Length: 472
Ligand code: SF4
Image (cartoon, rainbow, N blue to C red):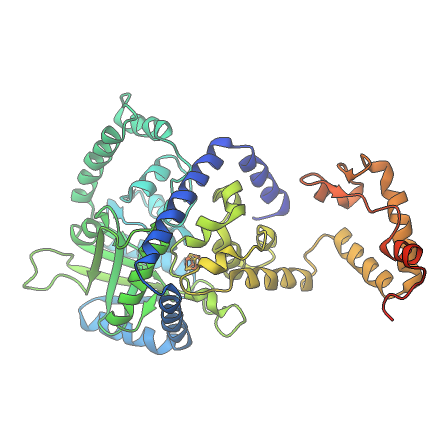
């Protein structure tokens, strides 16, 4: 259960972790520079963004009909479609399938939705071995951690830590050079691919007009996951649709560029149903699990555009707060600005009321978003929701009530301003308050609060300009 102290504790730990900050900063800088270079080749980036936003907004406004079209086409291609209203329903469907297939092992390609529904844990309870095949996911699976970045899940780990994790599996000490580590992972995973009964993948985009599922990977693990096991299950958030291949072209031009600054990723895999007679390989069965899990409750609200997100991670790569605290401090599956917006919307503002405040509101996330989600506006709206639901601390509510009361009454306001300096002076070092009293300590624990000046602007104006003309 999310709570304020848990959030504060996670932030405190994160800001003291120099290594974490350094690696996040390095990655942010690399991704940002590469992104700018890759965007320049597109010519007019704003036009691409406008087009991408139009496509996504059109899909979300017509989600029901596109989902119907997708589902009909998947079934026409010989696949099965399951709509899961909740995470429990999605997990139940996949675990029942695993039981039916008497699966002993599952190989997975990266899927944030499967993190969202805690699928691995449910399968492991059935004694099914689950192996992540994306290298970053494999690393964090061995470390028993959650992803700290949407597209670079192990961004917070260094080579030495990875070598230690791999050595534990190898039963011998491995050197921490990249070649040794990747060769070890390749050997391990190759064996897991070959023996897996079920392959589970995410879905970057589903194409309504053909009933296809498109995966974007850099390691080719998506292809092996979806081809070698006899059964392939793709899990998608219900919003990850595009109407046509032409629309996909626009979004695929923006996704890797926004994510890692690559013009295109190494592998783009499109899957249209199970293996056909003429196919040399592919699964015998294909299942598409379409997960709602709170998404439909966002439809028709002022937050609807958050469903436009293509999970590129660009907003994380420019966020000064993410830069200092990394992904785990956010506490949810999705981190950074998109996580601070999406998590409270999917799981409830009460549980995640701290997240909208994990932002400087600088607007860099909104500027960089390839589908133009107004992230920083949404963070402000969510703060309003937190206040409206009376989820802010009692002391803060009283302070603002008191301020409102005083601000409407000139005599009380003038008196309070005149007293502020005197009352707070004992807690100050002449210019700043470093250890504030009562609820003010929440602020002064992390920042210095300026001591209100001895004379108010009004009294200065009166004295210097010889009259109280303000506001007249
Ligand atoms: S909100 Fe925008 S920038 Fe952030 S992950 Fe989604 S699409 Fe990318």
